[in-house]
Length: 201
Image 1 (cartoon, rainbow, N blue to C red):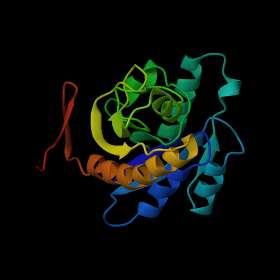
Image 2 (image 1 turned 90 degrees about the horizontal axis):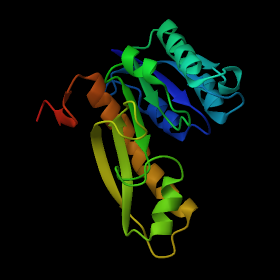
Image 3 (image 1 turned 90 degrees about the vertical axis):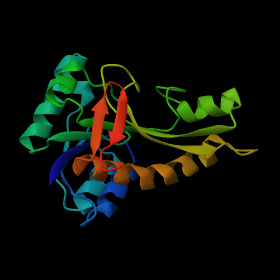
């Protein structure tokens, strides 16, 4: 069984989707939830589910490298062999990629390479796009750039606000992310360059 550490920064709705997915069809053990700041709801969700939770506070480190090292050490000490970013709002340094090669996953509320980085939902509305969506990808050294594992489009409806569009995107995230993580854990994903294949298809 694949052992993951889930990195969080806020409310933790994607974490909750992973918690709710646990079972025979989800060959994953969440061994730790790690937040970059204290007091966030995601920590409470973890503890309510009996999952060890800890804080590696961004504010306590003088640079990204030291912060990344602390995150990696906390995950490895918990027994994690992969990292899952679930609303984690920090950029990890190169050491994380070296220690967890092709074993860091992220979910992003846009159809990458469109709208990488922060405020993806706001920018989609501001640009007047008719379709946005959800991307799940491996993490590399650049922001929202790694090999794409799965994407699903979500229409932008007339009158959509950031809140209404974000809510529909989250519905897709909560369904798609556990499926992709289960595929990753089962060993059915293969990477060739920037292309990710399902090896059982």
